Amino acid sequence: MPGYRERPTPADTSATIPVEVRLTRHGVRSDPLRREQDRPVTSIELFFDVVYVLAVTQLTELLLGRLTPVGTAQAGLLLLAVWWAWVDTAWITNWFDPDRNRIRLMLIVLAGVSLVMSSAIPEAYGDRGLWFAGAYVVLEVGRSLFVVSTLPGQPALRRNLQRLLTWRAVSAPLWLAGGVVSGSTRTALWAAAVFLDTTSAACGFYVPGWGRSLASEWAISGAHLAERARLFIIIALGESILVTGSTLQHARPDPATLIALAANFLGTVGLWWIYFDRSAGAAQAAIAASEEPGRLGRSAYTYLHIPMVAGIILTAVGDELTITHPTGTTHSPVVFGVLAGPALFLVGFFLFKRLVLEVRALPYLVAVVVLVGLAPLGPLLEPVVLSVLASLVVVATAAVSSVVAARAAGSHAQG
Image (cartoon, rainbow, N blue to C red; front, side, top):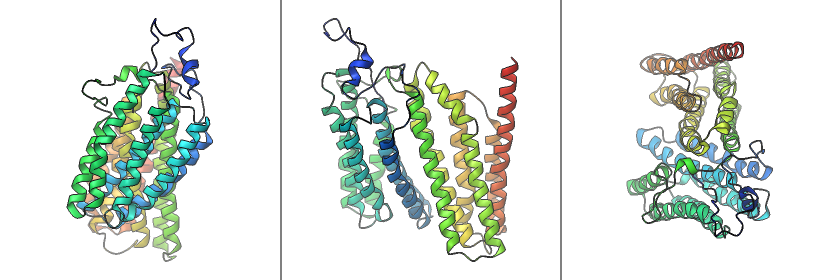
């Protein structure tokens, strides 16, 4: 979600005051160079993120009960809604000081509404459709209305937020109408709403008469946004661990189950290692030093983290299925969860690394090809065996990427 910095004009009597000081008086920090690059994520932001642990858990449970092409697409729509509710708030707290009372109160209210939205996810395509849609609309429209109303005297940033509000107001009737109807009509309406919400940032929130936002003018703290995205990845990985542990509680304590547990845990560790070993910190430094942090923030953190989060959730589904039934016939939903989950994560991470660090990390693409190649063999293997193979691919990819990154760092240091 883009943001502008205030550009003083000769008629502006406050033009002699540094822009970052003037905006901070209103709880906004919009200097494009972000003199507070190392500003840590605040406790109220972490409190808000805690609610999304439940959202990720509920999405996993929803997908477990809908492992069909239509069900997967429906779960994907809700994932995108949850993501936009979270990431739009992350952009707002990047511009506004979360420790100011009115912003803190806003986040508390948003956390409560997010709790309602998250609790409705399992029945979003049933009796709780209007609950989910209503909470989502309150989050998106209500947040935008609040920040626009608390931004007197800052026309550039305010106009940008008005563009956002306009797009969210256009999609809101589709969300609410979808919550009222049922079946395929609900899915179609929500798909249209998600399309509007997803493409709005890429379109620069264009509004006739107001024009569009330019990425070169988006003013963010790149390091802060990167840290927020890293924390959401931790939330998703933590949910995967939670699913594995809670499933084991009710599983048979036999060797096959324990092997499945070990494979799933190592696979999750491998995903963590791939993201956090070196690349996450390097990407954070890259966006902090970028001349256009807003462009990288939109592409790398707003969009390219979606397939990574989706891949982790899908991996958690595969983990639960393999621990529940580690032996016997491997059905297509198990093959899909065990292989497509890490493959989707690796595709997203490859694109992320290519965009931010300008590195062509071929080991990730090789791993994706191997995972896809295992799909025809899936039904011929027991679930635990397929899980072990998939985890070995992920762990091997993590090891190779670490070696390559270490060599590159050594060569750079010697140069």
